[in-house]
Length: 327
Image (cartoon, rainbow, N blue to C red; front, side, top):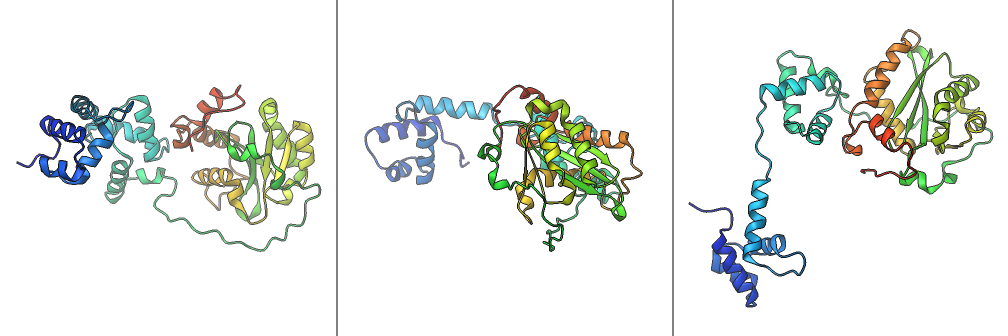
């Protein structure tokens, strides 16, 4: 039988010949392996302190890796119950697997969870309805001509401090609105760029004065940690000066046709659309429904936060000026 892994005897031969100055090609011929195997062995298992290859140390490193190698996990009944529970809470497969690993819970890979969901769908199940996209492809956004006019006192994103882009602190916000069916009713969405924590509020209209009042009411409890807020160029943000003065923060506007400059907010709105799809009548939804969606999003683990939830990450870093952020 052809052995895939190097034996301790082969590692001893590598050690002796490498110390004697033999080439990797000659060593490979001596142990009956390809040159790449020798190269990888020397690179992976040498003493990191001095670069010397010792066969005893190399064997110990190999045995340690084998001992700690992830075991093949079956999609057991317990795993299925765990996955079902969190899918129904609208966790994505990646969020389920990531949080399970963080909490030390036995689970399967995101790919295996996706297979399970699509099998369930093909059998008439409904687990796929809890996915954000539900199997639909993304549509490319078009750039329609802007006819919204110029906002007085507008300060462009070019003037925004560089630290905001670096995402080293909580308190740099993005703000937007989502419009209901037939342009009646709207939602105000605000998110923290680093923690992804989101606030959602119902608007009776897109009137700039009313929007400013609502935004101030939402953010006032967090006034002491807010640094900046960034919006698009919609006229609903014409009263930005009031928001800026009442909260004591700096208000900036992204460039026209540049949604990527508010990428976190665009993504947040997409997450909200999972619950309130386009065509939803925002006039008929209740404050309780909005709060339920907000809580779901803020308690859902995120990969970029090392599978902490936005609420957990925000709370941990509430008093810090700089935070550890996983990009």
